[in-house]
Length: 490
Image (cartoon, rainbow, N blue to C red):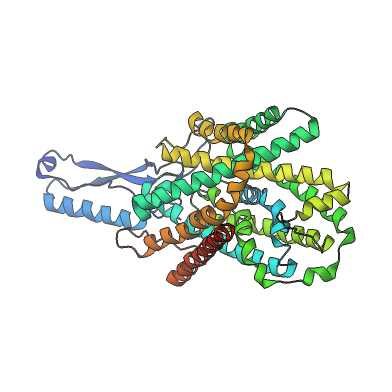
């Protein structure tokens, strides 16, 4: 919670001022307002009348005023950094923790869950389950680091709606901004292209409408929800979609688990774990909505931590159950020489009931992720263009929605191939190395002014070194693997 002292309400009186002092002097007592839009507002809530003797000296008045100023500055504090005010109704709308949990969970559960069985089948369920838990802990830590730096940046700027651009500029300078911008844009546009392409394919197969109509319909409906919807509407839509995901997921598990072989769940091949880390890390991406989360919850750190931990715990449970059902139902899979076989596709071919349920589950999962990524990217573009916060502008949403729609219709296969690259390099750089580097600069750099706010991630330099080191190890190992693969083709 941000602790900000009120601005100077009392000033030392000059000699010219004291010549015309009346017998009774009115001084204003400034108190922090409980409502503000994107920045801290102050109002005069009460007045105190003090009578002074005409024979009081100028020095006594100056000393009294200075003492009052120091006393007020030491005792009066804001309860929050700022408050969310509905400009239409002029009512305070504090963010809901439940809606925030749904936002994080919906953003996390996306198309990545459909690819998890394909990349974990070689490692086996037991090894992949441990990998998922470790990746979850890692991504929770990086998300908390992003939230910590975001709230500190809001404290310094005095407003909400702070994206990674402002955070990187404040902590890492221009180089950090360049890394953050290019990584952020690449990952988000690549994933949005994949979401539009997959959702339009589902709609086309289900209703027989042309591909361009289904892609446009999906973008307009879900993009319109993000643009026109308030926090409560978006939270309600996310809650409905997450509920649908749970229902369809439960149905899918019940149908597919009839032939589950429990002994196959004990398989573990540790040597195959590294190849699954990029996709699993990509599946746990939610950090793009953390700035939106911090703004909605008014910089309340305990609420932000609760939303991140519980919001990512739901996808973790879904991932583990999903992986167990798929790998336990089809224990023996043929990878072949052309690539990795898709266990989900094999399951759909052997069970006709599974197909429609998978389509519903996939569409709902993509819808929740699409909303989260649109909100995060539009907020990022608004900050990049230096647009005022607290109101929706059409330009950021057009720049967010139109490019993925066009690119998905032109040639989506190109961007599906780019997703592997994005998961390996983009995600681990943007949501692995960068949050730890920003937090390191904020906590230990002499150029960044400390704000004495509580930290969300304990462990000081050791934890931050582990976060950066873990991401760099995976990145460099993938680089070496790609180089050796290219040398083998030559």
